[in-house]
Image (tube, rainbow, N blue to C red):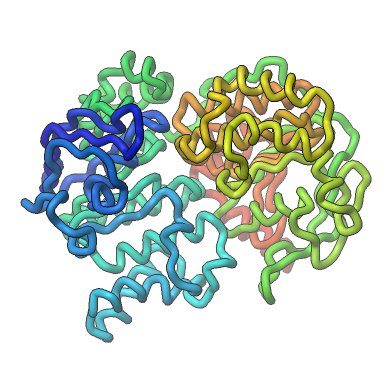
Length: 521
């Protein structure tokens, strides 16, 4: 079992404790979900289990954490890694090899498994996660969601006694997310694998977890069965957890129905889209017979597609379908191998990115790739200065006040969700006519999601065209006015979220792909 006894920890030079007086026990074979707002201490808790704290992250350590009777403080992290498998929030930091197969082999070979068993485990885990087709791919060619699957596969192949995952489905599509949880539950039941998952997708935890722990401001607020924790619905709402949807889960449990039943989509579940405006008929971005691929693999094929002024468009589809690639093509970050892309009449092939940046703001999937300054204030002002915009100081102060940022803090002192907000804020500051967001809500808690998406919707209502790559169907339903499903290098469907989201949540995307293939024949 895993036991916390009055555990507290503060990072080196930090003014406040990241965790305070944590006490609870995870029994062998349990499936525990950890929930809480961004920056609450969830990741710190996971690092205390696998030995990263205190052996990598230094600081003030109080109390005790035991795993299988071993005191984590006195046990080297490399010894703990033999029984505890970890999947981190930042997947790129976990990748060590160039190819998918080598990544899965890495741990097995380091732990000196027999050659025959290694081959058997590699084949098994590739099949379990449905990524046999990625076996020979370079890691660098994978989408964020595909990398996430590979990282999980590499750890599952070791079949650890304990598995700790920090938001393992953050970049996965709905079908893949459910599949990951299904696999975790099967391993949990078949091998008595103890699973601890930090996750924002409350519905999946309610369906698969046995217990929940709610962490807020470094303290353990609630711990118990799913039903026991969710019974504190008012307190959870005050602490930032989605009140309405938690209530639906609790109602389903109270009625004796499985929580999975609430995934059925009802029209009245939509957040009211106040002042929603229909897009105009002016084309602001168009793809004309565009094709693109990495190496010899074609990912986008002969695609025609138009975005209209005022659109609030969501790009969805399975992992690896080409959504992020398509968004980078639209933003001019990538240039098409064939065909042309026009942004406000400018051909992206012939236009410098510095010129396109005056028309398009781009939020990357990983915010850390676009933060480059020493202070939050400088980060917000950076784009304004680079584009030689007027009133830099005034605009910077307005954005700082709007998002509640402390001007002099370094960006990387913020949590992942807060860094995502900062990256968006720096884009909002320059008022682009088109904004492209690649998975903007990854790593954010519910409250942060709503704050960020309300800011995006306000921009849209004031005339900014929004293109959003998103796996979160609740966000798509609540905010997008138009939805495009991408797959097999093609546009599979284009319509209203109310019509298309139910097909995705009922796993009907394969039917759309089949229909598309039949039409081509």
